[in-house]
Length: 116
Image (cartoon, rainbow, N blue to C red; front, side, top):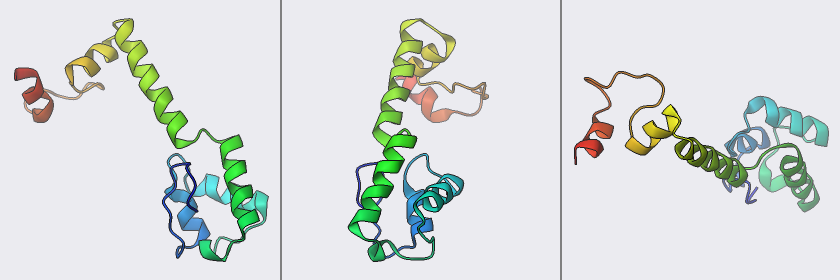
Protein backbone atom coordinates (compact mmCIF):
# COMPACT_ATOMS: atom_id res chain seq x y z
CA UNK A 1 0.00 0.00 0.00
CA UNK A 2 2.61 2.48 -1.09
CA UNK A 3 0.31 5.05 -2.64
CA UNK A 4 0.58 8.80 -2.40
CA UNK A 5 -2.62 9.21 -0.38
CA UNK A 6 -0.74 9.61 2.87
CA UNK A 7 -0.51 5.88 3.49
CA UNK A 8 2.52 4.34 5.04
CA UNK A 9 4.05 1.48 3.10
CA UNK A 10 3.47 -1.55 5.33
CA UNK A 11 3.51 -4.79 3.33
CA UNK A 12 3.51 -7.08 6.37
CA UNK A 13 0.40 -5.65 8.10
CA UNK A 14 -3.18 -6.76 7.75
CA UNK A 15 -5.37 -4.77 5.36
CA UNK A 16 -7.72 -3.63 8.15
CA UNK A 17 -4.81 -2.09 10.09
CA UNK A 18 -2.79 -0.72 7.17
CA UNK A 19 -5.78 1.03 5.58
CA UNK A 20 -6.32 3.10 8.74
CA UNK A 21 -2.78 4.51 8.50
CA UNK A 22 -3.96 7.01 5.88
CA UNK A 23 -4.89 10.44 7.20
CA UNK A 24 -8.62 10.84 7.63
CA UNK A 25 -9.50 7.15 7.29
CA UNK A 26 -10.56 5.47 10.48
CA UNK A 27 -11.64 1.90 11.14
CA UNK A 28 -15.20 2.52 10.00
CA UNK A 29 -14.31 4.04 6.61
CA UNK A 30 -11.64 1.41 6.04
CA UNK A 31 -14.20 -1.32 6.72
CA UNK A 32 -16.62 0.30 4.24
CA UNK A 33 -13.97 0.42 1.50
CA UNK A 34 -12.98 -3.21 2.12
CA UNK A 35 -16.61 -4.35 2.06
CA UNK A 36 -17.31 -2.57 -1.23
CA UNK A 37 -14.25 -4.18 -2.81
CA UNK A 38 -14.85 -7.61 -1.28
CA UNK A 39 -11.46 -7.74 0.44
CA UNK A 40 -11.05 -9.54 3.75
CA UNK A 41 -9.50 -7.49 6.53
CA UNK A 42 -7.37 -10.35 7.81
CA UNK A 43 -5.16 -10.83 4.74
CA UNK A 44 -1.88 -8.96 4.55
CA UNK A 45 -1.10 -6.13 2.14
CA UNK A 46 1.56 -8.20 0.36
CA UNK A 47 -1.07 -10.84 -0.48
CA UNK A 48 -3.22 -8.34 -2.42
CA UNK A 49 -3.00 -8.31 -6.18
CA UNK A 50 -1.92 -5.21 -8.09
CA UNK A 51 -5.49 -4.90 -9.41
CA UNK A 52 -6.97 -4.92 -5.88
CA UNK A 53 -4.51 -2.25 -4.72
CA UNK A 54 -5.29 -0.08 -7.75
CA UNK A 55 -9.03 -0.48 -7.12
CA UNK A 56 -8.58 0.49 -3.47
CA UNK A 57 -6.51 3.57 -4.39
CA UNK A 58 -9.06 4.62 -7.00
CA UNK A 59 -12.01 4.24 -4.64
CA UNK A 60 -10.29 6.17 -1.86
CA UNK A 61 -9.32 9.02 -4.17
CA UNK A 62 -12.90 9.24 -5.53
CA UNK A 63 -14.83 9.05 -2.26
CA UNK A 64 -12.42 10.65 0.14
CA UNK A 65 -10.42 13.88 0.34
CA UNK A 66 -6.86 12.59 0.25
CA UNK A 67 -4.07 13.76 2.53
CA UNK A 68 -2.49 16.52 0.46
CA UNK A 69 -5.83 17.99 -0.66
CA UNK A 70 -7.07 18.05 2.93
CA UNK A 71 -3.94 19.79 4.23
CA UNK A 72 -3.99 22.30 1.36
CA UNK A 73 -7.62 23.15 2.15
CA UNK A 74 -6.79 23.57 5.82
CA UNK A 75 -3.94 25.98 5.03
CA UNK A 76 -6.24 27.96 2.71
CA UNK A 77 -8.80 28.26 5.52
CA UNK A 78 -6.17 29.60 7.92
CA UNK A 79 -4.96 32.13 5.32
CA UNK A 80 -8.56 33.23 4.77
CA UNK A 81 -9.09 33.70 8.52
CA UNK A 82 -5.94 35.82 8.69
CA UNK A 83 -6.92 37.93 5.66
CA UNK A 84 -10.37 38.80 7.04
CA UNK A 85 -8.90 39.45 10.52
CA UNK A 86 -11.07 36.87 12.18
CA UNK A 87 -10.29 36.06 15.82
CA UNK A 88 -8.95 32.61 14.93
CA UNK A 89 -6.76 34.13 12.23
CA UNK A 90 -5.27 36.64 14.65
CA UNK A 91 -4.56 33.85 17.15
CA UNK A 92 -2.91 31.83 14.36
CA UNK A 93 -0.69 34.80 13.50
CA UNK A 94 0.30 35.30 17.14
CA UNK A 95 0.90 31.60 17.69
CA UNK A 96 -1.54 31.65 20.60
CA UNK A 97 -4.06 28.92 21.50
CA UNK A 98 -7.19 29.18 19.37
CA UNK A 99 -9.94 27.47 21.30
CA UNK A 100 -10.20 29.39 24.53
CA UNK A 101 -7.48 27.64 26.50
CA UNK A 102 -5.98 29.33 29.52
CA UNK A 103 -2.84 31.32 28.70
CA UNK A 104 -1.96 32.88 32.07
CA UNK A 105 -0.15 29.80 33.36
CA UNK A 106 -0.23 27.42 30.38
CA UNK A 107 0.70 27.68 26.67
CA UNK A 108 4.29 28.46 27.59
CA UNK A 109 5.75 27.57 24.20
CA UNK A 110 3.43 29.95 22.38
CA UNK A 111 4.11 32.73 24.91
CA UNK A 112 7.86 32.29 24.41
CA UNK A 113 7.42 32.98 20.70
CA UNK A 114 5.44 36.15 21.46
CA UNK A 115 7.97 37.54 23.94
CA UNK A 116 10.99 37.06 21.69
